[in-house]
Amino acid sequence: MSRFLKDSLLSLKPYTPGEQIKEGIRLKLNTNESPFPVSPLAQEYISKAAQSLQFYQDPEGTILREKLARYWELEKEQIILGNGSDDLLNQIFSVFFSEDTKLYIPDISYGFYKIYADLYHIPVVEVPLREDLSISCEDYLNLDGPILFANPNAPTGMLLSTKEIESILEANLDQLVIVDEAYIDFGGESVIPLVAKYSNLLVVQTFSKSRSMAGARLGFAVAQAEIIQDLRSIKYSTNPYNVNIMSLMAGLGAIEDQEYFEENCQAIIEAREYFMQEAEKIGFSGPESKTNFVFIKHERLRGEFLYSSLKKRGILVRHFPQDRISEYVRITIGTKENMDELLAALQAVLEEEI
Ligand SMILES: *Cc1c(COP(=O)(O)O)cnc(C)c1O
Image 1: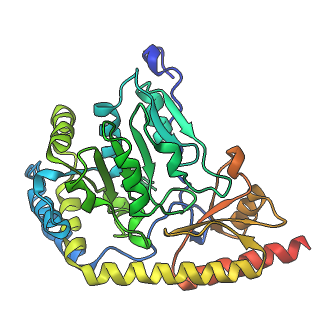
Image 2: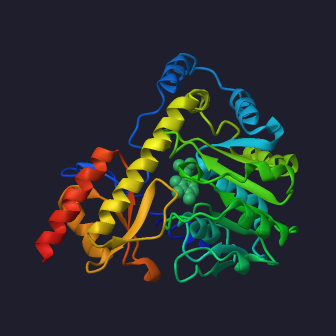
């Protein structure tokens, strides 16, 4: 650090993004990207948008917000776009959480939550997951601060039902409840329809995973208009043009190409079920995933060892050193062919160990 860094940031520990492809890596299953390219319609819209890059785009992103509003049966005033959902989470932290109110998050969840909390000096209460790694709704009733969790949760992949989330909303009517639905399209049911009923609900979604747009950086948040208005105020106080025109138009194409989206989600769900079935035959187990990744451990091999053995064989997966989950690896679901390649590598690791 330089001698100019301000005191309040001296202890900041930034997020470590997943490793990138480098020499010797043939399969990247560590950051939950889609194995499929973005929709051809989106690619077509991107090329068109590229022809008008000399102009500032509509900072409201109206064309996409209107499309999303129709898709979700909302008003466009209930939707705001962001430069990835990380951008929106950052805005949410800066607008709604304060230094004297505790924020409730699961003890095992998306790593970025704690980093934002550190950045903004927000006190955090980490609510332990149950022994089986599921979120216990009863632990989130009548709390004295805002609540934030991912559904399905990461890196466990486990899903809460709409009814369970509604019980949390109902028991915390005076607290903001934020549901991060980054993985909702792989087998879950979005709580976006509950926005009409609950003025304390804020839902965040991303185009990064199920719509194959991780590199485009596009996310959106949905809530009643007053909440969205608050997020607009920070957007217009920092970076009104946070969503670039190519990503905006790509998002439009991705929503319009519903068939392509559904096909891809279905293929990933099938590859996931296939992989889990095969992996269980060779000694792996893990919670039931409703995401595009699985969180698994082996009866005999340690998580760290699995991670490094796979890396030696050219396959990147993710390992978290955190106490309760260090036995596990998180593996992104790719195509069925990708999963066969992974299964072969896992077999080889096991054989070498016997
Ligand atoms: C991937 C992910 C995000 C971030 O998504 P971007 O839109 O790419 O910023 C947010 N939350 C969870 C739980 C994620 O896994």
